[in-house]
Image 1 (cartoon, rainbow, N blue to C red):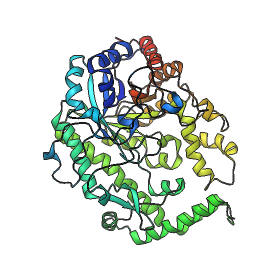
Image 2 (tube, rainbow, N blue to C red; image 1 turned 180 degrees about the vertical axis):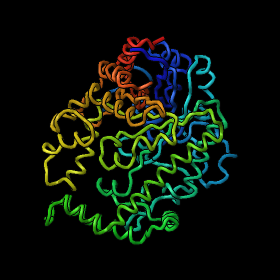
Image 3 (cartoon, helix red, strand yellow; image 1 turned 45 degrees about the vertical axis):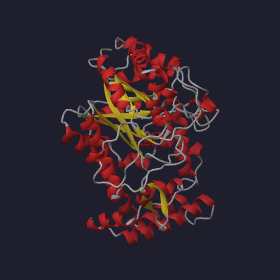
Length: 472
């Protein structure tokens, strides 16, 4: 198998450079594992992005770095550049962790990376706060941020900033401009992992957002926010009844379809919100290109896009290539069985409650293009690299053609949430890398965070890269 170019990346948090030293760490990444692209978590309040291993109670500590269970406070890990934040009231968000006093991770790492011929991308993800399973900080001490929070279908203040709030939106614009103008970077990797209103209903949360800003934007597009809010309240009643086991005259699936038929504003509002969410991606892509045309905008694409039929329908690959330079599908093989079960459990508690997961799983696999273990075994076995990583890479390459490269997000010790969940192994990583290139992928990104990986597991990647002639 001949590989013409090399993009071998790793997602890495700022704390690893503090714990292990910049020079020694970069030498290890380059020489032992063939890494030539650093995707650095530069702003987050999630331990999975900027901290140490968040699953140490289940997985133990990795074979490198500090064994320190203190949660990071989170924040921005670069110096303050106030000139870029004049159009937003969100300010004073620099990380306060003691390890990072007067530290700018990009300023610190970029010169050393350049000396070793390595590329650097800030790695950023929305949402930044209160994200279950990602080691969220307990307190977010940003002044004025509560003024941007969503309003749900019942007029309650929600737990996340509204993506349509002008100051929150402008804040993201400012962050990206700051990176592009202040540093010698190669681009930005952006990840968008917000649940939509209908997705939220299915998962058991109230639909969002009905704040004044969303209402104004909706009205400009001919969307009636009042009718949509009323429809989502009715939808909440349906899902509450379905999850409680209440009798539904024609069964849950038919009653759900009837809900959509009788309340079309549910889908109208869903599409309005999703398109505004996509607009954020498009806006950030444009800002990167305006600042410097040669910078790349990579999309780090949620694994729920291929594990959830609603999300898969809403985010087609071909469309996304219009606002990126490359895509990185997330395929965390050993963890994927647990993610799939969590996704489908929400459906089986409501819309699909009249059919067992064991009965439905083979059909859902067909719908989603998967071929994995049965429902009762999939958490313990995980997904197989030669079917899952290969299949998702092949499907992505076929969908987007030659428009942009596909760099597969290979899970290396992604945090487990259950003791009986499949463990990552060097062979799983090795086979995932080989499957990527066999399916037409043009690179890999080891994920989700170097600080949570075992070097012994990452050795499986090095073995595959050696076989491909990419370890040099």
